[in-house]
Length: 176
Image 1 (tube, helix red, strand yellow):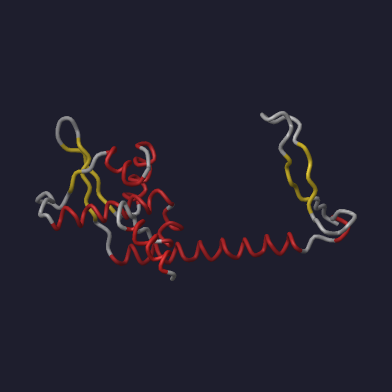
Image 2: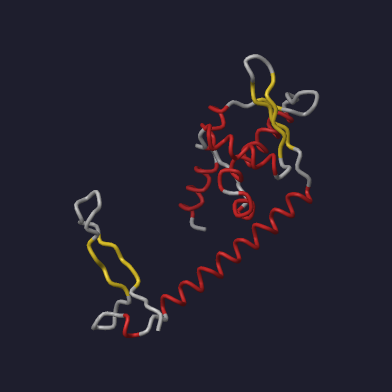
């Protein structure tokens, strides 16, 4: 890594850095993986300061999670529900007005299973992308233009918001 790249990496990771696992992203989704990583980080923070409740919960607001993750309230609720469904966190409302409390309950087995699911999904997506690329590259000659250089045709889309000025590329494939 060059010195400049090291400086950029150090600069970016010094503030507001979320370390999210790629396999968990495939298994759970982007918002869920990022929110889980942030909640893990906050759990460690409150645990190190001795500020977890007696039963192991910590308090966090919608706004504070939004500032750290850029996940809005609606998507946070969806991600929290999915994380609960997979057995990674517990979530309760306490007090008046109600405040959100989280507890990390995942086991290594749950995490390992999700990582395996994520790896399988990533591999399938990679295989599908390779197949799609091969299908694209193997278009018969009669599907290409007269110079046989481009296997796609471009056309003006007549009814779009920009008055038909955007070109749309589409495959000219027909089954034989």
